[in-house]
Length: 335
Ligand code: MTE
Image 1 (cartoon, protein in one colour):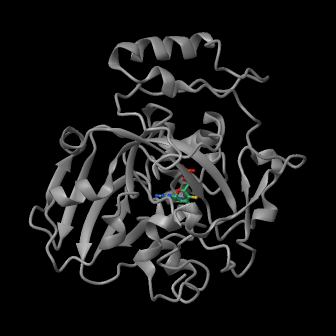
Image 2 (tube, helix red, strand yellow; image 1 turned 180 degrees about the vertical axis):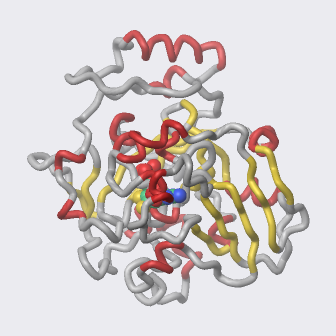
């Protein structure tokens, strides 16, 4: 983020428009799961928009989940065109694997994500080391189709699979003294080449945080999948946060620690460049980044000749749901 201006991002870094298969139609019941993956592998007819070169097939284990209700009033859904799977999984920010947009897809493959545990500590009545399986057993999966707006002024629409963050946090029984929640990503330099880099600007682990009321908001989500399948490693397997009304850097990947705190936690980007990246990081077209405008964004897929530039919406279009969290706050000061 700090390293590249959006204007410096070469169009060649952007994956060409890929085949889009609306797999969701095939995931509605367990009986159709196998059929869904088989059809994808065979180049399913009917909903496929075939382009050349062929896009990568959807990878990972198909998941069982409750599909999102496709109705315009549902805040967990948008009818906007989904960003093709190939772009979602090949144009990434995951500095643990490098700063190039294609580094995560190239280098995250060998990350060991099983077994996976999450340490829970701080102002909480049920601290401990939780196995991912135990967390998943208590949190049935559902689908959310959200916009993701990066602070670098590009955006996507992603069909996530996961569960509400607030529901999981309640299971750890936070105390009333818990005013914030902090998240940390795995540190494993042997498998994360960006953490071995001498030029890295980040003091690992990558850290993020939310105010408790933000974390408990129904839109805040823990993703374990996308496009109906297990989440790819480059997108933050096996467990990543999704906070759709905030800039993408709040949506921390591959989480191994959750701490409940009384004080506002330190976050990675705020620590690196506090005048550029704030704790709140709410999407706001009226508050520019010091080095570029936030008034509009490139919706992927985009290219030099079809930039697909659209206006940025306040709170990324989720204002009706979240604006009240910030009433009375000066959002230019608390950026
Ligand atoms: N989480 C970790 N651990 N490391 C990162 O570098 N990048 C963030 C966020 N989460 C990042 C991270 C940024 S800047 C963005 S825009 C989103 O992940 C990108 O998510 P995506 O690659 O799945 O689109």
